[in-house]
Length: 595
Image: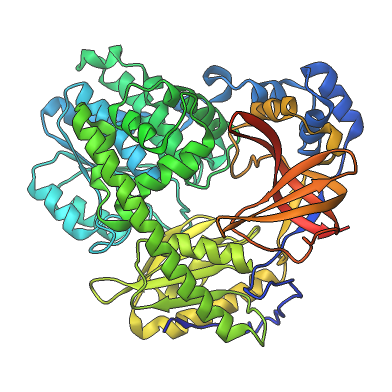
């Protein structure tokens, strides 16, 4: 049986009065952003957008200026800071050029998630394209765990590589980087994770989080940093490797956007530019692996952020979660069409297997939590583990627990060496990596950022870690909102929702962390009909008395406020659905309250 551990924090945290279904889902409340009608009017006139879109932009803090123009029409020239401002980037590129000129091959070590793999694939493909020998090393999630490891370093040293480049980890790998130095292998760390007191013993450290850098406000993920590295490499290698001059770095934005969209970094500033322009490149990519993957997920010619988040991303992640991430590097760099199609099919099958595994672990974890806390109420943090939990899906399950219970959540499973591997997901305002740092004395190693993190812990320290983590959550949650809520950008009437509005709001895409899909509050709608879809979702027909809206509640089949004849206030994301040639407006329900 799954085990869970949590105690009320000594800091005095008391579970609040969240509304729960019998299955423990925390239902969101609705909040409306402060409205700025005067600024909305100026935005409408200056930027030629609808009144609803103008109200949304004004509520999000935009004013009618050049920043809004850049947001609505992002360009590489105006939207990206120059590479020269990224600390150590040019020096790192010059070190690559020096080693490449000596004829020695280069080792790239990257993480097994979309961010690390898409970052590693960019650098690998570019170096091979200019004629430089390179090999990519990806840790085995089950045998090695996250990050750089001693076995990898020793293999690189024994293989005669002249340089080791880590992408998406390295900041906290002081021991392994010191070993590389002892073995005579120079190293470059390209990472975006929290630095804190860590000072990696590498030759060159490229991380916007480090002191005296702050490049692009520290928002870039590893794939974004890898793209900047490609830009710098093109200049540094041009003299000795002329082919570099013929390669346009923009060709790599199709890869850079994958990690940017999938890695929980805010889609604003340079990330927005990389994501938006990258999606355009992805839509017309000539990269055989991505073409094959687009075919597998049924993506249309114009690839959307949704296609990446829920189609391409999960399949790329499935490799590292279920077997090994190296096949993704092969997929993203191959020039063999048949091989690309074979790998895309395999990733699709692995993703289906991942979904089944995730569902089983999630069900077991939720049962454990509900049975333990049904009577007493939720503690400040949730910690659950079981020896049978598949460590490839514990991060996704932790996120599902946050969605269900709205508490910082830890899920752990046992690895092949008898060590427990854990994944953590937080709630708004809660820094995962800071919380892990506060209880780091109980852990073998940890890493991450504000929204997510991972760690390793010995079996003998499980209980103490669980207790310490929940106590730390208790301290932090005293100053954090612990009731989930949907933040509506503006209030609308049903007559203001149209197909034209849905299309116009696409100008605000891509959506994600830091740039959420616009949410609109509609008050006083009557529930005319309710219908379950596939036993998994709920469709509610809503009306204001003269117009109707199909309200979709995804991954839920009931809600206490949704009853036939009831009046409700809803926060929706406007969309439309076309079926059998008929297009109807659709509101994806984000929160529902009794009117």
